[in-house]
Length: 397
Ligand SMILES: Cc1cc2nc3c(=O)[nH]c(=O)nc-3n(C[C@H](O)[C@H](O)[C@H](O)COP(=O)(O)OP(=O)(O)OC[C@H]3O[C@@H](n4cnc5c(N)ncnc54)[C@H](O)[C@@H]3O)c2cc1C
Image (tube, rainbow, N blue to C red; front, side):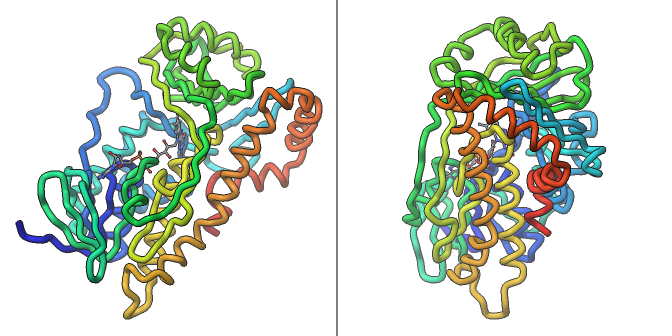
C-alpha cells in the first residue's frame, strides 16, 4: 500500500483533535486527522448527556474555525450568573457586573462536534480518516503511522489528541502522573418547575463531593454530581426519577429551591475522575493536546476549555515558526509547552486545592471557608480577576 504524507498527523477525532486539525490547516499546514468519526445526529427530543460550559476563549476559537456559527442558537444557553455555595456562604458572579456578554456558554458536546464536522468538510487542508492509528514508529524526518484499515502515513509532526489513555504519549515515551480522585461524575438532565434564570449553580457537599446544575435552553438543567465512588455507583443505579428526588435534597444548598420538582429528561451517565498530567506536552516530533496532556477535576468545567486553548497555542506557535524551522524540532515545540505551562498548572492547583479544602477531613475549617467565600464575594477586583481568568481572556492577552 502506498505511503500517504502530510506535515502533521493529528491522532484523535474528539473535540480537541477536530479543532486542532482545523486550526493547523488554517495555519497553512497539510493535516491528516486520524480517528475522525462523524458526530451523532441531533437528538429528536431533549439534550444529549454530555454537556459543556465553554469560556470566552473557546467560543472565540470555535468562531475563528467557522464552527461556532454552525451551532443552532436554540441549543446554546448563555450563562448570566454563577453561584458557588458552601458552608452557608455564597460567591456570586454576574455577567452584567463583570461587563461581559456572558460568563460562559452551555451546550452539548455533540452539537460542537457536528459544527466541527461541517467546518472540516470545507477545509481543504485536512485529510480526515475515520480509522484509528494502530501503531506509530519514529522514522527519518518524523513518524510513520499504521492505521486500522492498513493505510500507512508519514508526518513530520505527531499531535496526540487521543484522550486520557493516549497511545501517542506512550509511543513517544512521555511519562504520566495520575491520581484517581475516588470520585465519579454522575450526569443527567432534568426539566425544572420554574425558570433557572440562566444561572449555573454549584455546591460542595459534606462528603467532599461537588454538585453542579448547569442551565440548558428552555427550562432544563444538566446535573454534574462529582460524588465519592460508592455513592456515585448507588446514584448510577437509580431510575432517573429517583435521582431527581436525591438532587432535590440539595436544591436549598444550591439556592435553587424554586426549581423543584425536577423531572428527569434523559438517562444517567457516570465518569470516574482523575487528576492526570503528562510529564511534558512536547518532545522531538510530538505535541500533546487536551486530555492526552492533562485531565482536571470537572468542578470548574474547564477540561475542554484547556484543550481548546492548547489548540490555539500550538497553531500560533507553528504558524509563526521561522523559515527553515522544522515542524518537529524540539525548541519550536518547547515554545508551545511554555505557552501552556502557567494556565494548566494554575487550573490544576485551583481545582485540586478546592477538592482538598472541602474534603470531609477539613470539616472543622467550615467557618473559615465560609469567611473566605464571603470575603471574596465582597472584593469586586478579585472577582473580576477570577472571572477574567476563567474566561481565558487573561491568559491570551
Ligand atoms: C462529567 C464531566 C464533565 C465535564 N464538563 C466539562 C465542562 O463543562 N467544560 C469543559 O471544558 N470540560 C469539561 N469536561 C472535560 C472534557 O470532557 C474533556 O476535557 C474533553 O472531552 C477532552 O477532549 P479530548 O478531545 O482531549 O479527549 P476525548 O474526548 O477523550 O477524545 C479523544 C479521541 O481520541 C480517539 N482516539 C483514542 N485513541 C486513538 C487512536 N489510537 N487513533 C485515533 N483516535 C484515537 C478517541 O476515540 C476519542 O475520539 C468534563 C469532563 C467530565 C468527566
